[in-house]
Length: 364
Image (cartoon, rainbow, N blue to C red; front, side):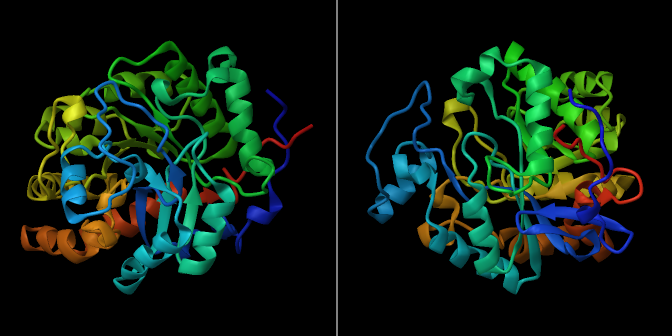
């Protein structure tokens, strides 16, 4: 790994803390309410699933949209987020209810740095891009022969020089994928991500395969490699909403937990499972908040198929603000708790300290 160099001066923002957006650094204090796990531009249309049935390309009718809720992969273009005009339009309700920042967790090779820049400029939303790789089955072939050192350097170079020769820098590492049984390559990417986190100061966002309860395995590896637990976000704990012992075992080690599947009214029959209701998720969040863990929870939707957008009958990006926040307040959380989950916790994760951790390795 190349030697550590001086701090990146253009990340210094008023001597305080900065967050890296696709349009450049901004004061972390100005991030506002933030969705920490979404997808704004990604072409997942070519991805295949073991039990996939294809009913067509486009969602042409209301019946198609209903069928896609049972099987989100049955229509190829349901997995294609490549219409920038549509995404910009879909973000406007979020802006109207006070949302200010969205983290696009789309990793290599599906992300589109230039597309994200256009979305940010046109929507008025601060957009933060991820880095790294998703789960094994979606890895590019060449990843199998890459060392952990080279993967770490790739992430660091993204942060220092910009991704894919675009000059667009990631503001978070992830979402780093792990499968139900974590593969050798996934373990290598996790190690590399921990090393890159130490070099860049960026938070590390990890995809936990739904229902696999691999969070402790992931944490053990990351912590052994020197990752900062307070800058680790474990995603999709939503699926284990009723397993308080598991949640507490994770929280005891310091990470933030992602309740990031609100509004997922689709089946996940490819996993042989069905996601919990928003009511169940809200109750789990309230329990953690009342137990003193409001400072360790984030809320998001993980929108990644068209049928979760308003145009196609979904709840859209404003769902948490419009529908979930009232549930949380009704059932016992305070407005301060909600602000913690939507603004303060994301700011803590996304901020890079200008006097300690605003550092990256420059290319030699």
